[in-house]
Image (cartoon, rainbow, N blue to C red; front, side):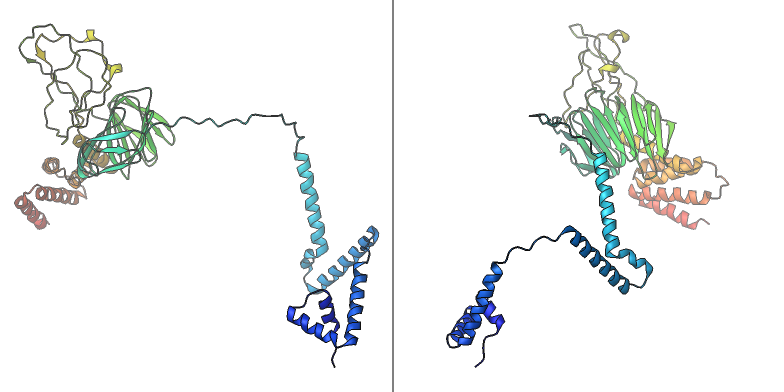
Length: 471
């Protein structure tokens, strides 16, 4: 008969056997006196082990000797394992010593750098962060739109992006009463519309602005590297891939570049190209003459009337040829700050800081209706000026620049103007320049494109045949 081994008996005493194994062992013990004696020995040994006193701590001197012997044995083993001399740097003794040295250095540096702690006052109040009150968000109203992503009377919120197609235009009224106009193929983002901050980002194309001066808000136009800040004026900003133009019709603006700040006054323009800011003259829009018209004399005397110094006529079709509107001007009074409705005729800007005193004007004869002497701020004229500037900047000679301007006008579908400029160019004396034939062909092809665009296909075909027959 086989007997239970010692491991099974110890597992039984420690209750480590499974239930079925435990039952089998107990049945065996009932019929085997020898295994019962062995079990008693195991139980006795377990009791003795439980009664053993705790292991005493090793003396410090002995611990150092044992540690030194273990370290020497580990070094010998490391020397046998590595054959290269530099690998001995990774021995346990060297790494342990290095770690201890680094720890000592860090601890010393920390103790030297840490000042004595000041006593903490009791119940120190925690300062609360001061946050500026949120500015209310405003909106923009579209006054007129042609070939644009916005429609007339549409209300635009902060963050909106508006654009015009080739040949399109758009006028809108800003929250402070200012007027902003997009020329053909332009894109502008309404970055910030707040009571004290108005920011417009020109992504491409041109933006014209008619802005009343106000001390309680800042209007900024950003175009690439340039920031243009309004100081009360009429001005425009044009952003093209090769250059940026800022031109001032009235008043003054502040132009900020990465290298500094410059003020630009009426009748001047600056161009930003290749990191350089250059100044040039800007031909201002002429003011139509005041035409008095005699009417029936009123029964009551009237107060002398003061014509406004600047009125932007923002018409739906932006018609340059429209004559100045005749209107009965109001008597001298405080400026009207009421915004102009989107479907009404644009009125004079509140420009009290530029109005001369009443005594500066001779009162008109009694019963006279005064025709407004407003400047016409036409987007079409602005586009033509900017195309001419762009052609002059990027082209060396005057004749070549004019030819380039004709091609740009044809690209913009400004065809009546293109035909007029091309006719003048073709009547000029032919030069001996090497590129004269290429320039002449470019001008003639621009005429062909515009003749087709205007529906004059027969004239376009005749001119195309002449171009093809030329040597």
